[in-house]
Length: 263
Length: 76
Image 1 (cartoon, rainbow over the protein chains, first blue to last red):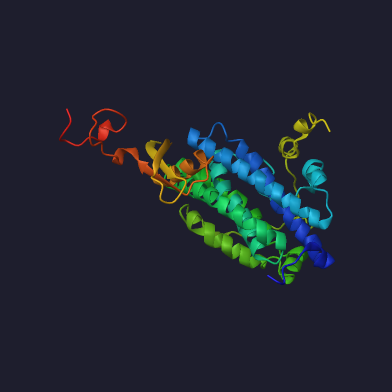
Image 2 (cartoon, each protein chain N blue to C red):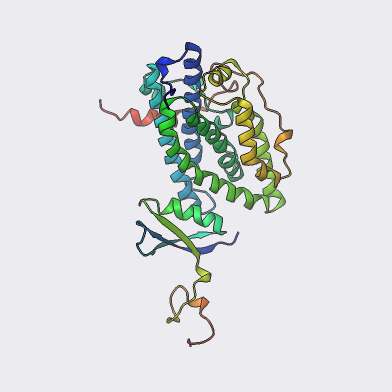
């Protein structure tokens, strides 16, 4: 498209907002990969462990592509990937700690991964040229993440009361912050919409509700009744006030492995 | 949770015959298709299908993995 945008052509406000979005998506995918990796062994079957392994690789590949987009802004991707402290991470809040159990992993596959995909897909439809060219392949890979989450979600929803209760607890605890992450109602979010880089947050919320609402209905949860939790919103990072735990951060940055690098 | 065996068939090019590339254990068809795609993803497949093993009817053998599905006639 002739009006596709590159970073240098944007207002300072839009550039800063876009950088926040890219970091949020990339950090989200890197942390989601870490959390999925906890289930390579110990998932309910060998096949589900293999699927988690494949999804880890997808998420880390997507994160790498997203971090690389930051070169457009003059940001050093090596520092961003390997040297930032936890409090600079922009991942959605519910990835700060490990999944509670397999029900938590299933909820995250459908909801957290789903929210990242809704945001990423919208980013790929906007005017940022690099996103328009790189996002479609990522979205194609995400289809199977959704399918795995959906299949397991339906399984839990039609299973025992305990299984349903665990899934419901995991889902409802994640949703308020996920909804805030999609629709933060803050300055950077508005700046991106005005620059044609992202649709309004309300639209992302609507797309997400359309995608996951029918699954939540199976648990008797009406997504329309869940209020976004924007308390203590950190506008600089586009998320709530916390940060990823130290163990996940070490893995996300590759601290131990980098000690072995000979440069 | 009871799992069933699903046999996985795939081809790399349009027009090639589907060939048997392996199997997965899954609780239902929905999970079987995801497991198959994620388990056998080293190749760039043009088409992949899964078939519940219990639906495969042996024609000339009374032994092997499909023996349990043998129909009444023609076998011991």
